Length: 394
Image (cartoon, rainbow, N blue to C red; front, side, top):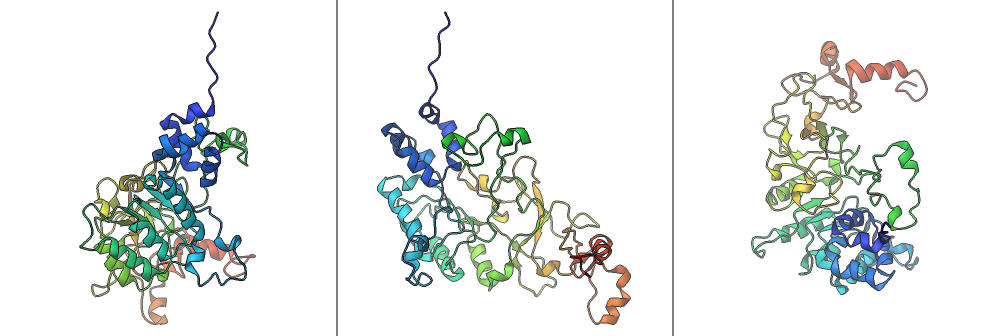
């Protein structure tokens, strides 16, 4: 007579730290709290025995805005403490449960994050945040953020500090991750999760999640990643990024390719991909290569890593993704990059005409980029379709 194996229950599965570490990053904090409230065994799993896994990657970007459940008559625009109440309350609970030290990747994208909250996070001895993402946050002034970072890298800082190694701030948040599934398998998963095992990422036998699938990043040449004009004066950021070299890495790098030697460097904000100049397929500068270029000369890749809290993981291209790339600023690509297809020409292969209209007309046959479009492809296509509705000339 064949012996029957005892049925596997959810608690038994989650006690396996390999399974738990793959599931938890996809769970919002509310789901973790609901799971902990299911029974004493689940509470012990979440807050005691496996807290290093359950709270290692904490995403608070789904927290509701404070004014959604506060006092509508209060002047929320000027009260930083009120705006940061949801995040501050979450940190209070984590510290009370003695699991704040387990948080090594912290996601605060899109919510209200005043500088006072960042001071509280980094000044707390229990805090071990190594990767912090504050992209598209509200109520955070550049000047105050720079003050916080300058304090972290001060010469008199304690040995082994700063604990923070990676800061996502310049680029934008990405769309929600989707599983890389065949259509039939994708439809088999419910659109609205009904429990822990229905959430994407917990379908371990059915799907494979690509953390950076079809997301604009430095390696895939998707063009402008952020508006550099919103980070003025850039000189202050450039000084800080240079001072943080080897200590804190950012999701941008410094572009030294000025149109003339007297111009100062700028923040690189345009991803050009791995192919280089349209003509020579290279450039005066060498491409940056992940795994070869020093890590302090490489940007962080979006989104922040789900399964590790290290700088190496934050700079590791996904399988199949390009490992080398070119990146420049808006200034040095003026009139030499197509804003539609993102092809570009380096200084050795093309010099945009400058001066009056006569000089421009004289060089008309040699112009590569006109009105932000490459002449041979995108501009011609726009002219052909422009007579219709929605075109350049329609």
